[in-house]
Image (cartoon, rainbow, N blue to C red; front, side, top):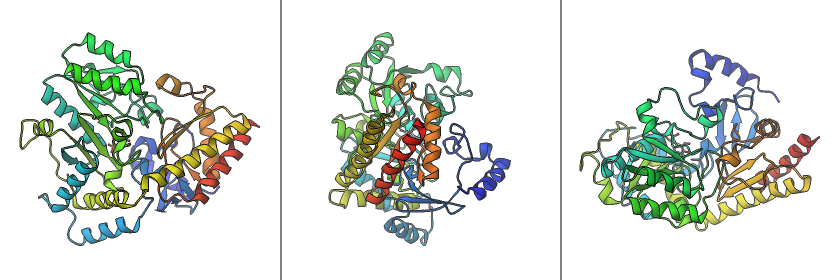
Length: 431
Ligand code: PLP
């Protein structure tokens, strides 16, 4: 496989960019080798600067549910840019976006747009603290909520991949306000509630995890969390930056039938541009400036380009009849195909899937339901599989601890190729 141009581009990049990348998960540190520099993408395909083409399951880490360069999104961006790219004053499209989000996710009565998922979770936590007048937050081992100080405690995604789930630079004071519990273990949460009575402002979680790989909550866990929060006057925050408009039209909360107090969004609602949002009950959201005393602001918040790409994307997923059913069918076909390969070759692995999010865990366990199961994975075997994927034209996240994403643009041919190549790769790894 020729990646000569990517190798040169990386050598240039490291001269002035730390690690050569603007987000650590893009580096290939955990799998070894040179990150691929991308030239363009279209539909389900991504093409590097050496003209290698891959079926893409990263999808910009989640946003590209329609596939890359969807013509309607590109056209909306073009039209918007012609009128200027930012005004720092209200625009009608922001209201349209807010209306559609509130319509599709009924727990959100008011929503504030920000510029990233990180900003959304940081702001939601500040709001929860302001509203409850309490300081502590419970998060779960292996869940990732962006790089805000409060969340870089036992964090997932890149923090886990690079072995820094607790980052230096986070003050002891901030760290001590974050309590950690075990995902899918309600008792670990209840014991924190009894130890820190009336002090916990919020419980935040990925309602379906993606950042330690895909794990679904048990009914008992997720319903128990809702009840514990209600009983203790604590806000339940669903971080749906990844799952929002991904696992169902109304997000994980629709799938799981749980009403959180606050929800954070990002990725898909930006249609590939930098966006985040947080929203929830009117009574809580009214605490925000300019209505209330909790301050949060942004020069580019609600940016017209980001709103144009995001709103166009949301309208399409909302208006296409059977959009999520089609996506489900595609992702199920892929996951079942890989599962059959695992069984046929007796290859040690577990594939978890919720809607169009999936993770293939390289493990001898028969199930992966929590962080300690995830930690038993064979990351070396993953790295070898990952490299074979690239050689075979399949682009997946360069870490075991991530989700893959199927888009509506993935064709039957793409999915079948991926299944066939996974069979060949498993066989090669067994040899
Ligand atoms: N929350 C979740 C669940 C995420 O998956 C991510 C990013 O992957 C974030 C928050 C942070 O979002 P961003 O990278 O846009 O800051």
